[in-house]
Each structure stands twice: as structure tokens, then as C-alpha cells.
Amino acid sequence: MRSHSDEWVSGFLQTSPMFEPVREAGKSFEKLDHWPGIECLNQLNTDPIRAIATKSGKRIRFVPQAKATREFVQRYEPRIYLTGEIQTREHNWHDLFNALVWLTYPRSKAALNQLHYRALLQESVHQKVMRSPLRDAATLLDESGVIVASSNDDLITLLKNFEWKTLFWEKRDAVIEQMKFFLFGHGLYEKALCPYLGMTGKGILFHVNEAFFERGLIDQITMIDIWLDNFLAREYLTSADLTPVPVLGYPGWSSDNTDSSYYDNQRYFRQRKMKKESRSSNFS
Image 1 (cartoon, one colour):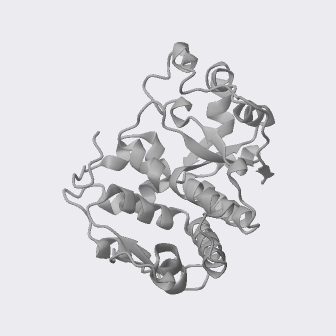
Image 2: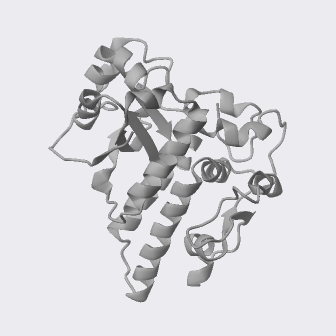
């Protein structure tokens, strides 16, 4: 499938299992034969009790993209934090998926926005030219994040150690039963419209109990949203916390990965070059 920003594809959420987390948020768009307008997105956030808000308490609202400005309060992330207004381009896959992720992981997106805001504020106050490591990591997660939930420590270790063929092929049944990937980054969702060998997520790993996999998808996502929100509240996120994840290796996420030789491509399934620890968290 091509992902041209001006080409609408009806039923796009059914074209890949990677879209599973955002299907509930986007179900009203499934049968449309045209792009949903910005007000259609706002209609999905009208529940007065469960309305999505920023960490500053501002109810989010999708608005047309404004002309770029250097004024701090009008920059993209500060404007969201201070007013709740999310600048959104129409007829644009990247921004549509951003909206769907806000609707799917509202607490985590609000937490990321707060990280961006505080990092930008510090950079502005101290007149820093370089982006901070915190903002770099937040951007990576926002664009390319994938949440990995597993009840099996051995599988998590294999993933951390880049033992891709052992993980995805030799331990395939265990991965299906005891490890699940949830796309988070809206840039990664856009890439999933036209997946390509080399498509890699930035993973945050959560150890869960086995009962997690017996829950329904909506419950699983709600739990992940809470855990990720709490994780980001620590405000010491760095790129080292984000484990590279070749997402097309996950069983069923590519029609080609049913053959063991698929995992021999070391340009995609790269070997670990140096020892590097990433934090994982225990949740139940």
C-alpha cells in the first residue's frame, strides 16, 4: 500500500496486525471513502467524563496547522501543553495516526507532551542551541515507539541481546504466547501502511504476569497506558532506555517471516555490537 499523504485508503486499519491497538479509536473511519475532517477527530473526544486532557489540565482539541512561529507559546508541543490544541494537517497520514494514538494512549501522550514542554522550556530559558537528550529520547518514543510486554524473562533477555533468530524463530511459539508488541509511535504506524525491510521501532519493555495475556485488548492497552505514563513521570528517559526492535520479525507481522531464512538478513536483524543495558519494568 502506498502512503501518499493525499490518498485515502478505506479499511486501512484491517490491512496489518500492527494496527490492532488503534482500531478501536479509528473504527468510525473504517468505511469512509474520504479523509475524515478535523472535526471528525474532535467528535471522538466529546465524553465529558473521559475526555482526554494534557497534564496541565487542558482538554485536547485538534486544530488546523498554523504558520510556523518562533514564539514559544505557539510552538507545537508548548501549544498543546498550554492550550490543549494539537495542530493537525488534513489529508495527512502522519497527523491522523498521531490523533489515533492520542485517543488510544491518552495518559502516555500527555506525559510525553509534558516532557517535551519542560525540555523546551529549559532550552528556552538557558538559550540552548542543542536539543537535550531528554527531548531526543521523547521524540524517538513519540515517533517510533513500540511497547513490548512479556511474561517470560528469557524472551526479554533474547530481545535485549539482539538474538533475533532465536527469539522470533526458535522460540516462536513462546513469543506468540508470552510476548506481545504494541505500536505506539505515530511515525511507525505511518510506515506500517507500506512496511519495508529495515522498519525498526524503539522499544520500552514491560515484564507482565501471565494473566495479562488473558485480558481483552482494550484492557491490555489501558494497563500499558498507565504503566508508560508512570514510567515517563520519572523524567529521566534517555535513548539508552529504548531498545531497537525490528518489528517485522514478530510472528505474523510480515508474510515473509514464516521462513527461517528471513531472520538471516543481518542488515535488518543486526547483531549487537556492544554491551548496553536498557531498563525494563515489572508490572502485573
